[in-house]
Image 1 (spheres, rainbow, N blue to C red):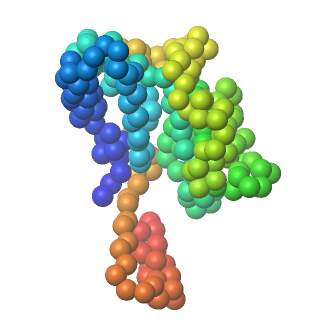
Image 2 (image 1 turned 60 degrees about the horizontal axis):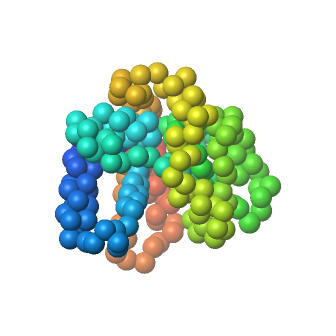
Length: 220
């Protein structure tokens, strides 16, 4: 299946989900005493080649003003697996740096090669991302496990996204975002997702030969 940006994220579907989440929360709050009501946190997890700014604009331009006023973005955190960032010839995968953009992303979590902080692959990626986002906090979380309290506080921040510095960068880098007019662009080159399922013990030699055959068949 071709993984274009339109295939990864649908603004209308997301907006409908937000409306449903607000309705459910209001129904729940109506049944609770004011003394036991708790603040609601909504964790949105994105996959594939979705631009974060598209999600921001979907919330910002929600047709229901009640939803727009109820939900605010506290922080945006990106998880980076160093082994999954490069294609052949050291080309980065599409949207890799876009997903770490200044003005939108507050934290970048690296999920491997963190035991050795000076690992060449990790250092190279950190350098690239730092050039794209000079203000992002870098969090080292081997296998995706965040252990430090201060890192958890960064991820759960309620105001880093709306800080004056982030807001200024957002207006400079994404003109028109507040009205939902910024065009993030499509994925290039187009990506094709191939899923492999195993129902028998893996025969390594046979599997490698089949993978090479697939690689040869998709070369121009």
